[in-house]
Structure formats: C-alpha cells, structure tokens
Image (cartoon, rainbow, N blue to C red; front, top):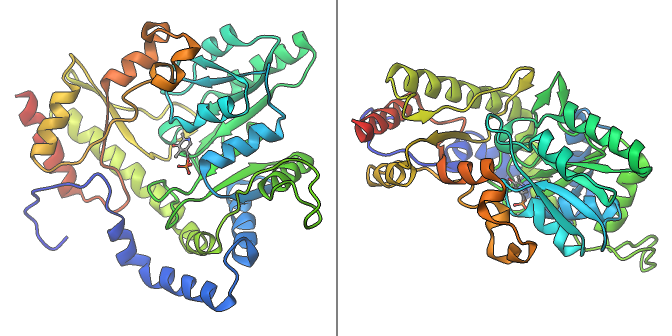
Length: 384
Ligand SMILES: *Cc1c(COP(=O)(O)O)cnc(C)c1O
C-alpha cells in the first residue's frame, strides 16, 4: 500500500494476489489454450496428484465444485431414500442440500460453542439404526473434533451392524490438521472447494474429492463422468461434474504458495486478537480461538458480537467502508426450503446463537497491519 492514510478495508481483495502471481496465472492459461484440452487432461491429473500429496492422502478426484464433491461423496456412499445423514445446521447450505437431493433424510445437529463445528454430543444423540453417513464440516478453517466423531461412529457401527460413512466437508480447511493429521484423512472421503474466495481458490468453480480407499475413490471418479466406462457404456447413473483444465492450471500455480498464505492468515489472526485485547474490547466481542492440537488455517476470522449489537456494528463498519460478512445468518434448520423437516429455531440453540452473533472480519494474506489497526479503532469507536 503506497498511501498510509487508510480510509477503507475490503472484506477480500483478490486483485492483490493477482498483482503478485498474475504473470504465472496468465502463462498457465496460455499453455492450456495451446494444448487445446479444456476439460480434465494433464493439468487436472497433475492437480489431483499435487493436492493428494499436499493433503497426505492416496487419491484425489477433481470435480466441478465443492457442492458436487459433497454430492458425489454421498452418492459413492450409496445414500438414498430411507437413509439418514447427519450434518451440522451451522454450515453452508451445500453441506446439507446434497442429502435432500438423494431423497435421504437430513438429521441436523448442533455445534460446539468454541469451535463452531459439529458437537459430538449432538451427533451421539442423533445417530440411529438408519444413519448411513455423517458429514463433518471443518468450519472457518479449523478441524472438527474427529477423534470423538470416529469413536461414536465405531460404537454405532458395532451396535447397528452396518457401515457408517464419514464425509469431511473440508471446503474451508485445506491444510488444516488435528493431532498432526491433515483433514482428508479422518473420514472415508473429504471434499474440497476451489471457489475463488476459498484459501486455495480458482478463477471460477471447482472442487475435489479426496480419500485413501482406492475402490471408493474410483467409484467417485466413475460417478463424476456419468458413470461411463468405457466410453458410452454406462455402468451406473452418475453426473457430469468434471474439473476444467483452466481451473486446474490456475490452482497448480497457486498451490505452492498455500502454506505461506496460511502463515500470513495466522499472522493476521494473531494481530487481530492482540489489537482487540489491547483495545479492551473483549467484554463486547468474543474472539475466535485455535483449539489445542489444531493447525487452524483461518479461512475466516469470526467474532461473536454480544448484547445484540452485531447488525449495528456491521452497519457502522459499512459506513466507514470496512467490509464484513455474516456466515451464516440462519442455520440450515431455519431455511425456508427445509421447513418440511419441522425444526423450530430453538431446537438447535448453539446454532441459533451463532447465527445471531457472528461477524466475519476481513482476513486474507495481503491484508495490512495498518488496515487492521483502522478496523479495530473503528470497532472501538462503535462501542465508545
Ligand atoms: C464453499 C463451501 C461449499 C461449497 O463449495 P462450492 O465450490 O461453492 O460449491 C461447501 N461447504 C462449505 C462449508 C463451503 O464453505
């Protein structure tokens, strides 16, 4: 930033990243143009290999979006009518909608207050003979309590005598770890999104399914291409969800920077926490924390604003040209399209509370200290 007088802070500014690596991105697209191969192809194969290696899993399958990665995963788990799938209510819509699309029953569970991720006790209370799968969302860049989830699943499998699939929704958490183990290694399958605003974002939609079981991942691969093998011979009814070569080429350029971007996000997060604490604002807002034994990749820095002041604070920030966002203003159980599930807002109290309190602040690798100081000063002004 050349100008030292900050008078606005964007929620996200991808142009700053382009200024740093734009030439490489442009060259990568040029290469794709020259090969004339625009869907799957060598760039996608290379990306699948690179991401598998980065996430320390055996296999990866590129697909059209994170939403499709989730749908493909539960299709591979053979979820269908009569089955129940457990998913936290406090998440992006796509974590849950895939279940309804397969005609299965959505069992929404609550979140833990500190992690914003699914609460193992709530999972325990909702697991049943009909549970076919659990979608564990690693929200905001931090791994859910997978040790507890695995234990609950193991007990239930013994009790009910059938497999229960664990699907990780790692859309916000590539690179996150729990007990030194990367997300992607805790479930049967793990889903990534390369939506442009994610920590590793493409220049359009993209997604990936990761796993360590060859048979299961091969089935995902079959499903992503209309269940076709060989060409025009369809073994099962799949979908069309392939990854574009353009996206893979861009992501192959960006992946080597991911760890340094994560380190920058961790710095931004630590600076916010210090600035808010020094400004004595921690009785007005609750700061997000990295839980023990986690590598938090800080996809979002989400505070809780107490005393019902969240929306007023957000409006005040907007007036001062400071970006912020609300992930998410409603739990899945409060969505109009899921009214048929029959939940009342209070049925999932931690989700409801989070939906009313959370405010996501700007966090991205190129965000400057000066911008953070301006933001924290403005928050202090609001509460003064
Ligand atoms: C972004 C996101 C998705 C969906 O990914 P798309 O690529 O946008 O389809 C799913 N789950 C979570 C938690 C996400 O943040």
